[in-house]
Image 1 (cartoon, rainbow, N blue to C red):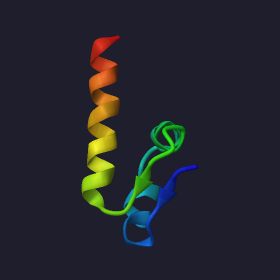
Image 2: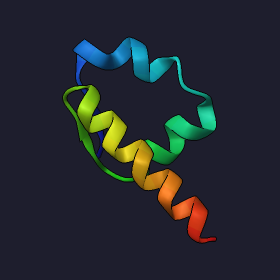
Image 3: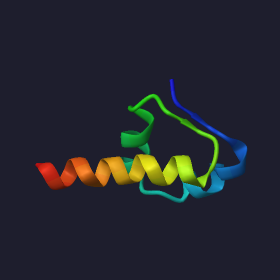
Length: 50
């Protein structure tokens, strides 16, 4: 189960619903912006391989 820290919850909530769903499916813990950026970079990298 993914967790989004309150400190970045507003940034996370500003993302498109499809992207939020993709992040939450990864079962990650997002404590800060660096964690969020890392997951977003992984999603982009996977999209480029398709």
